[in-house]
Each structure stands twice: as C-alpha cells, then as structure tokens.
Length: 471
Image 1 (cartoon, rainbow, N blue to C red):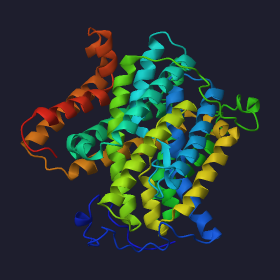
Image 2: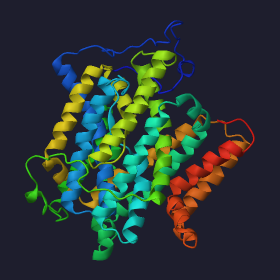
Image 3: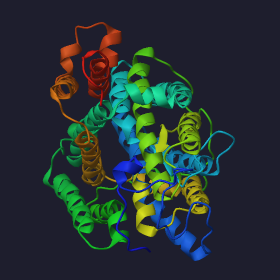
Image 4: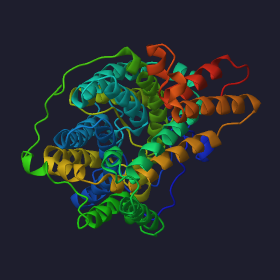
C-alpha cells in the first residue's frame, strides 16, 4: 500500500497545480500501477478487496432503505440486495472493459446511487398511500427508473452544453438537499423504523443505544491511522451492531431458511407499472447524477495520469456517462435501482497507488459472486433498523458534506446566494410540511412532494432566469 499524500480530487489540471502535457493533456502521476498495468495476483486481490469494502455498504443500503420504507417482505428485500450486488458487478465490468462506445475504460466502480433514494422513498410512500401493494409499488418505481435511464443515455451526447446549465451551484444545492432529506430516513431507522411505531417500541432506549453504538464505532475507526480500518469502518460498525443486537433478540431470521442456495437473476420479476407524476422528480435526478459522474470520471482520469481535456478525455467522459445510463437501464430490468460511478473509490486509488483497470475485473467478479449467493442479502435483510440507522446517518450526512464542498468552490455572490436560499427554503419547506401541497392538483402534488425535486427544479430555473453569470 502506498503512503503517498492523496491528490486533490479536482476536475481541472490548473486548479490541481499539475502541469499538462502540451500534446495530450496527460498528467504526471505517482501511481504504482497505471491504467493498463497488470499487478501480481496477490496485489490485485488486495486492491480489489479494498475497493469492495469501500463500496459494499453503499451498494446494498439503498435496497434496504427503500425496501423497508415501502414495506416489502423479507425475501423481496433480500432479492433486491442480491440484485444490487450482482448488477454492480456487471455494470463495473461494462464501465471498465468498454463495450464499443459504452464505458470509460477507467477503474470506475459502479454501484446503486444514493442520489435517487430520497425521491424513490417519497414517490414509493405516495404510491403505497394511493392503494398500491408493496410489490406493485416496486414495479412502479422500477419502471420509472427504467424509462428515466434513457435521459442519461441521451445526455451523454451533450456533455458540453449540459455543463453550462447544470452548474456547480445547481449541483451543490441538489446534493445538499439529497443528504438533508435522507437524514430524516436515517433518524427514523435509528429509533426503530416505521414498524416499531406500530409495535410501540419506537425510540426505545434499546433501539437508540444500539444505533448510537454503531455510530460511535464508525466514528472511532475513522479517527484511527489505519487506512484499511477507515475504509471498512461502516461495514465493521454494522457487524458490531449486528452482534450486539443478536442476544437482545432484535434480529429476525425467519426468511433466511426459505432462501435458495443460489439467486437466479429474473428480468422484470415484479412487472411494469408507470406513473407520469412519479417520473418527473426521478428524471431530474438523472441530470444531476450525470454532472456528478463527469466530476468523478475527471478525478479518476487525473489520478491515473490520463488526459483531463481534449478528445481522449471527452470520449472517456461520454463513454462513462453512457455507461451510467446503460447500466441504470440494465439495473431496472433486473429489479434494482439506478447505478452510477462511485466517487469513494477514487480515494482507494489514491491510497493504494493502484489505478489499473485490470483490478476492476476482479472487483466485478467479487460483486457478482456476492450477489449470486442470497445468504448475503438474507443476513443483511435481517439487520435491525437501529443498526442500519446508525450507519446511514453518517452516510447520508456525508452526502450533505459533499454538497457543501461543491458549493464551497462557488462564488456566493448576491445572485448565487439568492438562488441558494430560495431553493433550500422551498426544498426543505416541502420536506418539513408536505401538507402545503394537499390542495394542489394531483400532478403538481406528486411531482413536488419531493423536497429534492422542488429545490432542484427551483435552482435550475432560477439559475437560468436570474441575471448574472452562472456558476
């Protein structure tokens, strides 16, 4: 493992203070293994496992959060977890290997995107309240995600004009809103989740104690000097919480005995069910994740010494965004949620000094294997809500921090500050007081019931119409 100081994850060679090659725009790099290198098997496996540890919980958490929020049965949640891991492996292979124009050809790990979770929960909860069953609601959500993936596929061909409208100001506002909306979901889980409200155990000392223990373990491990412990802190925290919850009788293993030995991926297992009102807020998020992926792919290119401007760079970014869209389409077909490029794996590249895409084939293989065996999903499905809540509180709060970092690079002029406060006010206002929309037409109510959609659309419109330079 390299003990180098990490490079800043900027999207410009100038801001990173790194001179460009005048011909290619390539960056000097201190990678131990570059993009096309083939490390020895032992080193390859070590690097691959660190990537899997860094991404694992983020891949499965959306399935757990959404599944619990819409009341899915244990075996359905376990199946969602298995498909999340399986498709992340397939998507990672596509992104790394590059199939025709699809994929970046970089060490870009794909996983289920947190950006969609808050809005999916909001749309799904509304669907349940309108009379759909949990599995009908899942079909509704997956159909919307499937159709929405075509937005990102189309946007991949318009990278330059898109960046002029979806500026860091808009992206930063949306990312902050995503994190803030999700924090409510995490805190509810810490107290025991929706099910405990009916059982009368909501916010019991037992629930709060376990969730705070998980939170404490993760914080302590993040304060250590060990890079490996820091990268696997969330997973270790969940395991500790799991073990503590076991003697307290908080785990439910009823469905595990009914799981098959191997999960067989079944396309469109839950069928189709489309609703235009739920489509609009989710469609908007495909635009946001497109912009985020451009930044992630640029950072990866810079880390491994590839160009960060010019034709090679543009082809990589277009292929990467197209890969995100195609992979999200495949994910919806195989019953899981949109995939995107994971930024946290850039940190692993920095720490290990290994930027070889050859390692990515092993990462993809490990993820596929984890997804094929349903016992993995079953064990995590049995996890008590307070254990998951303690971990996701930090994960969702880190999303807020990411949004703040984006906004930190924006000149908060009077114009930009006005856009910021109006967008955050409207977005959080709808989240805190959803009743404000109860007398509006059904379509408006459904579209703007998500604080993320409300604040994000407001930011986008204001950034276009308010006079002044866009940032």
